[in-house]
Image 1 (tube, rainbow, N blue to C red):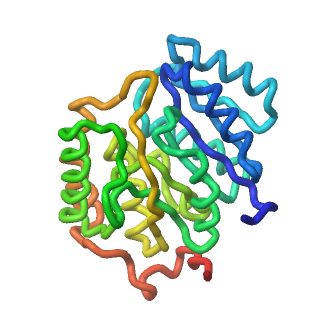
Image 2: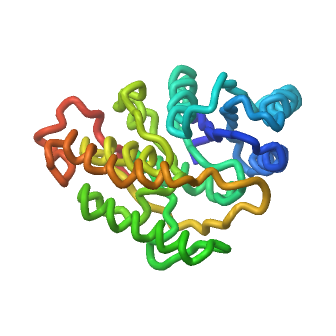
Length: 257
């Protein structure tokens, strides 16, 4: 890892009081320093207040409070803008519930030195999901295939939420124009970077169902993903491939390996 480059991990929270302390402890114990931004949507269980106390005792922890719960996508966008304004070179995103292993963060950042976006994938080279019911797994795998068919993106896990962005990749997106939430937010962010011809790579991870707290999955999130991918295809003028080199003069070049 480039020890001189600033890296932050953005974690949205809503009622994650049981998970946030061990998450801070785990990220703080990693062999390379990473900053942590907790974006709390006024959790009624006191997650935001606990995050403030953790930030007082841990200089690498920062907290962004939002006045209302209006979607995962908006929480991430607010966190991304916060990170870009402070000059972070690598911006990671992950869940607060340990379904994503914090130990994988360093590998994602290392790979991001060679590309623009790294996707932590549950399905490349096999299925690596622990403790999910069969219907949830079928829904996730089916959604990934559906997205690939509609958009043309070649990625095995486009709905996954464990990623590392380069600053230039996030800077190329007008975050205020992102309206998706849930699964469709993950799809849209990757789609906007991929269609610009930027370098997007996958890294296999193990995904473990949360042990504490409750899932934020809902039917409305599923339905949004079903129709939103068609909107992305329309926005891209039905082009199912990224820009070619001759078409992207205004896009910063991809870093070399």
